[in-house]
Length: 425
Image (cartoon, rainbow, N blue to C red):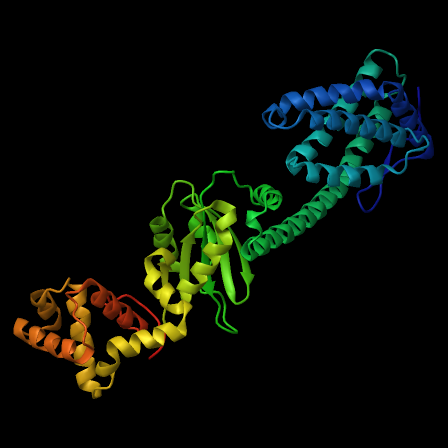
């Protein structure tokens, strides 16, 4: 049985232990070294039971790794406290490695720290049991010092593990972010039709094979922030997952729609938009994402540069068609509206307003007159002028289409919606 003077406390509050007591403490812990694997396996069993809600949903390989890691930690820890050589390396390196490994395995940090606390408690109880069963001849004072030593070591272990775990988590987050951005870049370039890459993209973005996706594109003005403010937060509230990136003057996102419609997304995005934004669903999943990106970007560009709005590209197909060919659009405007645009400003504006209202109200002079606050006969007279100037009759479907497209091209769509003039301001 060890004897000696009691421990002293330094001015800093640290317990000072005499060399004789230190030897007694090491001898006490040395009695547990032969039982290290048995103690470690008991700790593992208790861990898997205590936190079974987590471990039951993880691969069996993780439980095996926990068991092996616990054995290594207990073996080295007991040797360290017993003052024995450490042929495998320093205990502190093992703690760091454990913190990094558990972060990569996705084990929550609180479970990692809880496991170490449980391990220390089991070791302390095993030491007490040795003393009670007379396998350890040591007085209560040395036993208390041994307990103080192991619980003090826990604080050091926890600090090292927390630091290693958080550093590894940050590294993984950076790697994951770079990988997601790379995947989004390649999807926008059209790589989604490659089956091998598509499978990689689904894994990185956590997509199901049948998930409905869409692309949102916001046009970035030079030197300005994105016109969409934290769109992922608003979309999360309706359970729409999203991944965002910046590419070639566009802030774009891949949205996982679930059961939602495009209109649901539009309602969420409109209040948080301060610029030109468009959305297009992909008709063929990842394979069609590049097309959705291109159409959404072009649809956003059809909105007035000094305005704001969030639109569906599918609702702006005429604008998209016109924007594809400037030459064809110029000919269309000249042929359909050339004579009207040549009129004096006031007369030109009056005729264009009348034509727009007439087409908007399905060729009803009465309803057009109500919108224009004039008499029905006035609308009929003005439409006669328009027919004479354009040589086009809205009663003929083809002529009606040409007139409507021409109005869209000059920024005066019959439905009154926002549009950027394609040719003439």
